[in-house]
Image 1 (tube, rainbow over the protein chains, first blue to last red):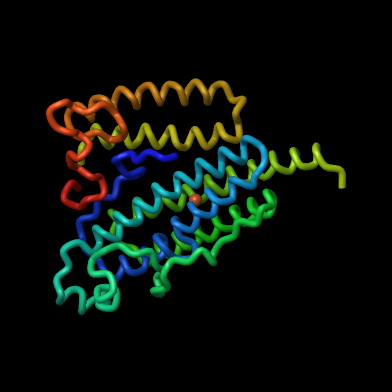
Image 2: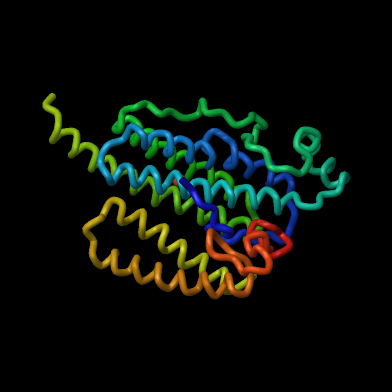
Length: 190
Length: 80
Ligand SMILES: [Fe+2]
């Protein structure tokens, strides 16, 4: 089970609105390499994994990705809070506005709604961990492309934090894969 | 920014990161000692924050008004 902790994993304190940027960053909320997909991928895959280490890593990273989802939601919300109709029209936020108002909706930067089709849960511990390592790299690339678009240091700070977490997660998944490999080669004779 | 919450956020993050490290290095006794130390410090800081502000997680509330609903919710721009 899970318990909500009423604080962000890393502070999000944005002073300047920027709806154009919000439309891009929202891809890490509900896009193909976003935090929601990451969390569901790991929390689903852990039911079919082996070794205590891989179970712990999938559970803990799957949980941390939910904290990242919350950070991205906070960034999007703070970049769009109290927008006037004029600001909405002038910044191309009108299409999002007519569908979601100033709410936060899981979608990609291109406007495609969240889908589980961007990840797998294959029932094979080795296959799944390879996917997870690739997923962390895809998320890292996305954060780097986003950083190319960001000038405001208040927005860059949490995005840089999230980018660094992808690198740590990649490392831990790699270590978990080693445990799984050793376990499988000790128990099975091919 | 509330500095107690900020320090708690830092300590809790250290615990998240160390926990993840310990998942794949469960025999690292130095890291376990560090992890335990951080949890103790964080829990003291959490009590201090909760006394003055809002509950952060499931903890006993003040008896006259349910503390959990107290602001701030950490994502809100007005508490920046
Ligand atoms: Fe990640």
